[in-house]
Length: 157
Image (tube, rainbow, N blue to C red):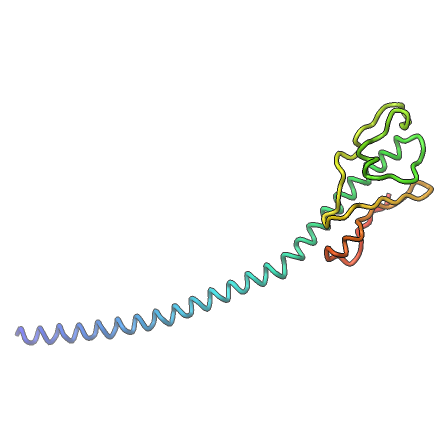
């Protein structure tokens, strides 16, 4: 009886070893599949980051530039409205300094119509152009073409 139970134990041990080998082989196959899936996911993330990020950044820069242009426009309109004479040119420094009492229509000092000088998101200066009638444009500088845009961003006043 003991001999039979030893044979049964041997058979059971062999079956266990065979099933364990099969398990290891299955795990090796799934490990390879896991690695391939991981590499594919990393490639997708890399692609999205390299293709989408520059476009996202450019859109953010463009939005920032438009916001800056609107702020500068308000300062220019205020400067023109408060000035005794229609200025032929206005600079960022003029907007930051404001108007002295002798320059303003109401005889009071108007300081800092623009709190700080603005530079466009691409590192260039904003350009303020005024014609003889007092109308004009504010635009990003030529540095915009280096920022990936096809043309300047301009706002009229």
